Length: 359
Image (cartoon, rainbow, N blue to C red; front, side, top):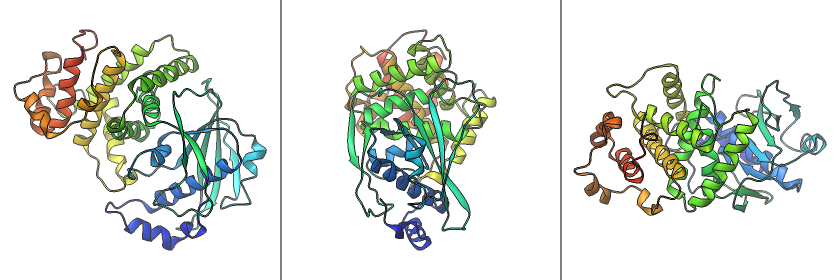
């Protein structure tokens, strides 16, 4: 459990001021409350897996962005969840029963607390997915971070970095397995992009990532009554990445989808800790995602994971290289975003499949 002083306004302001970026103090507060809820869940001693964007705060070195929801795979009774309320910083629990045509076996619960910032009532959302474990590898980790001090140690089970990357990649496919356009979730779409951007650098087990991706994609097809294969969702991801990379370039498309992408990019900054986010960084992230989807689509193609990481020694490989006509507009990246261009160079070396490379 978290030390009570970490919920106080003085601690929150001190924590906020320790970061370079002008973060939203209310999001900082909600992130700390989210981890308190996670600690309370761990103390119930149920077997569950902590996943989603908030899990990256424990999985990745350094703190990248704030995250305010708790996503788990497992089973909890309402009685068990109710036991958290009244004996903690939370004072009310609501079962958020949503009307949906989806077959996803997920329950939503809101844990309410009184903010020490403005005395308003706020909540942490807990999403519980009742499903089997799709991950090849899980790890156990102490709930700890520089945002708070621990009063009582708790441990939680998480997917490995490679596994959560495979999971996250399914979420960045707005026409198939992912967060859909037109659902007022432009920020959520870009959160997936940003998380994949960071996870990319720590991929160590390609096979585990692909296995997890395939399992979750098949689950999503079933939930959504889609008669598709993982190749379809990977193509969806690839094409979404291409569309983002082409923004503001000659021949780029401006439509309701690109408006959502732009809106999400603009809205992410309030969640970030010590770095900014703009269209060029988003294009680097999208280029990484295009490369990942290509690797997943052609898993037998050999690629050294270390070669995927960009550094200045890669520049000599790009000196005389130009992308084919299908992606000719992306050649502009060579001058203004060489890292992103490097990932497109790798894509061109991985496959010459015309169907895949047709935007």
